Length: 292
Image (cartoon, rainbow, N blue to C red):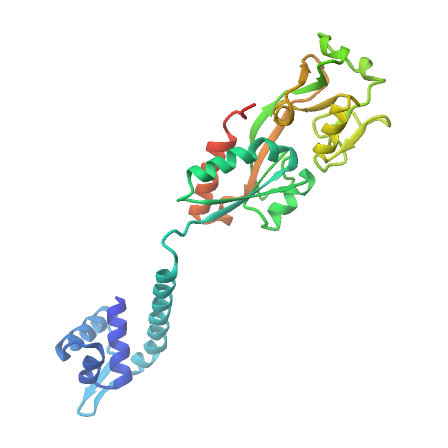
């Protein structure tokens, strides 16, 4: 069944004449008759009763008419919409990142977007780490990158970076020269802990003390560090993104590795184009080692 056959059927039904339908369609009467015959043969049913008064719809033709009209209308609407779409149209995907992760990957995502600007538009957003799951669930983003994996079972999550957490300290501090650092040596040293929006620092094994400063605001914590306030446990990549005058102290045994997750709703929520684009972005941008 072709759209041409449906148009011919509607023309005959509306004019009640094969000859009048031919005039409307600017084709011969023989072409109209042949097309209707092909349609009836394909459907295995008569659509018209031909008589001296013209062509009248059979009961099957009456049933078929509104459905054929709807199909032709939808076809014409789609054709018009596609003609009005700019030839430069490209799909858009939105990726939200926890604020600390944003500073690692935003530049690389923008570079990826520039490189593939004819294929996809990438929109970036930042939020607190604790809000990432809500952002994804509410469909404000197609994917999120965060320090903590989503808790629900409707997510597809991958660890995209695992970095040892190091103690970062100003170069002129005496602790910089220490070969190994243990918790006892930190008792009188205020720690700056980045929480990413959680109530605690996800990669720090202990609860904060009264002398420690916890915040989800990285700029605030780094301003304190630059003023010599204390030391800061953070993923190595994140710290180097901010400044290069800090040195690392390697052997603090209690600190857990930091994982960064790329999460999206299960593939069934997306059309194949969107999901393939997200998979491509993850592979090309997030799965590569972060440049420091």
